[in-house]
Length: 123
Image (cartoon, rainbow, N blue to C red; front, side, top):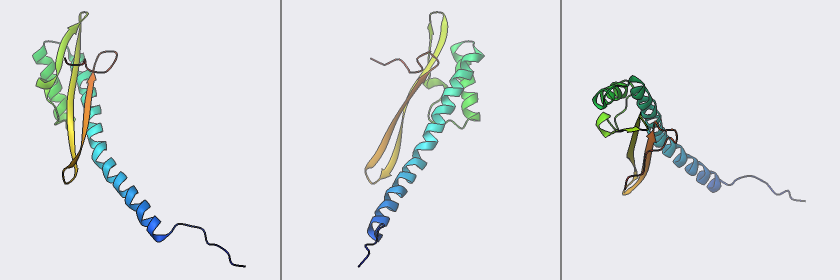
């Protein structure tokens, strides 16, 4: 009696490794942009806590952006409004990640200090 061997073929192994490699490379490109997004979220909360005028909030954000290695937006890109007597800060920005040739990945980030956490939709 012959026994049938079980396992993965060489071609199957190469395909699995190629897919894992592509997922790893994509993850290595996405994780830094998400880390920057979280740093921006923390910086707007800190800037809001500093209080003051719009210019002071922008300066506080820029100081936090320098410390947090934030390069995607600056204090001028923030939307600062008074809502029900409280200052709310929001932001919206896009991050384009080139993949290969003409292919790229577009990530859209938004956030706010409002309770919902998302920026108001622009009309």
